[in-house]
Image 1: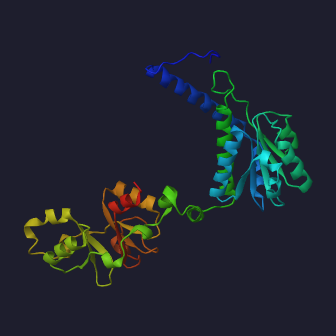
Image 2: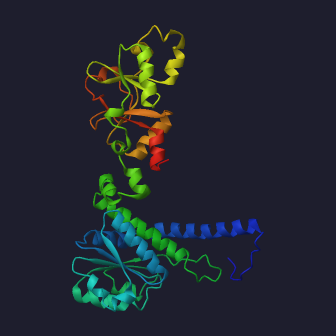
Image 3: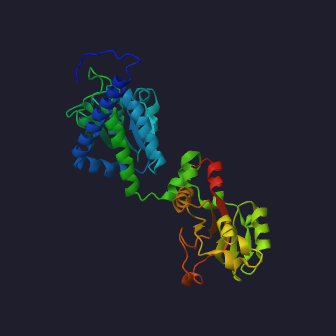
Length: 345
């Protein structure tokens, strides 16, 4: 990459795309080098961070500070309580935030960020361990850390090799790697993540089918021997365009859709629900994640499905011989539009 800057005119779309791809390629190679460099120090760092009985205090200045904020947020969101500490503010009273039980994660590309000195002095007095993240050995960060992860020295995507680009990309990626490893080490479950993300798009994706479905008072259910005139009335009155066919025990044994009506159109006045229904319908469990349920409906190319209890089949066609042993009693119904109205698509 040349150190000279050649201006790109507004209309030079090919050059614009070419330069963007060059930047991404440089950063991608940086991440390849980072992945290949991981070793014992990364393992020890994760073990030390996982042992924090308080919080992981992530510190950095400048661009490394912005990355540190994001890493702290990711750690907290994935089950490892964390906070960001600005080293400059630490010297003016914020050192009181760092207490016994915490572990400090200090980030600096050069490793010689002067503002970190005060923080290092404080944690040394208090016996608080430090994990360092830097690209340079024998730097302040490397010398003052209990464990230091040395990142490969990165070539910045900036023509002058100055503006933090590749270096911050690998800091961010390493922070994500640490968060995911800690998540696995601590056995953080999907339910735990759901509790940490009750709102926003993540909360919606982790919401259960039971939170979006229509309840038992909205169920279009008919008996096996109900005349089709009455079945059609049920289908149209509930607004879902289908009817569930249940046996004497209330188990869902079939469904009737518009397609079934068309296939039996000439004989609808002569038959009953059992003769028109499609047997062994696909069902959803109430405890299933909404995201998984939507994917299942799309894959199965169906727009609506009945919902059974948490001990029912997990998104499957129920075989005849299992009818007596698997809970097939519908407790709700859900339509594709319910997902869309909630913002999940």
